[in-house]
Image (tube, rainbow, N blue to C red):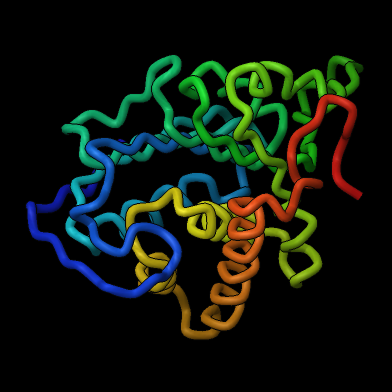
Length: 241
């Protein structure tokens, strides 16, 4: 586990960028749980959220867990903002669930609070243990059934596909964060998130990062105003075409 803690300083901005423009308007507590498999950048995404929170003066703690992540095992991270020194998210406590893989969404479904926000990438990455055991990957609608029961704010985000179309499927985590920003789920400006991502990145990444975040933000805005209904998770659908 590692953490970033800040003081009580706050800074405001009158612009209308996606997200809360003034950290003083942030919720008393925001709990974000991220889940995926090794190689998807789950912990990296949690670190970017922590840097963005720190940049606007919010207290933030990050915790992580992994199971054979080097071989595609499950990886998760908890980002807890303005809620004390422990990065622990218990059952029905997460305000936001970001799942970069549907089976990992199913594993984490019990953590989402009633009517919390869930973003799920429908692209499956079957664990090697399934192949070893000769088992098939479960149908997406079965994996997502618990999430559908927990909230009507569960969206499938085809981030892997969109990132691959943009040139690098590893940018799926950026698309998810951009979608959160576009949905207004993050207590900072879009520029704060962009700067956090680019803070320790090579300069050659800037165009790629900005594009991925912008595409995610555009999708998030469409979802927030209901113009992207095809991204709603429905029991009868598998992965989006």
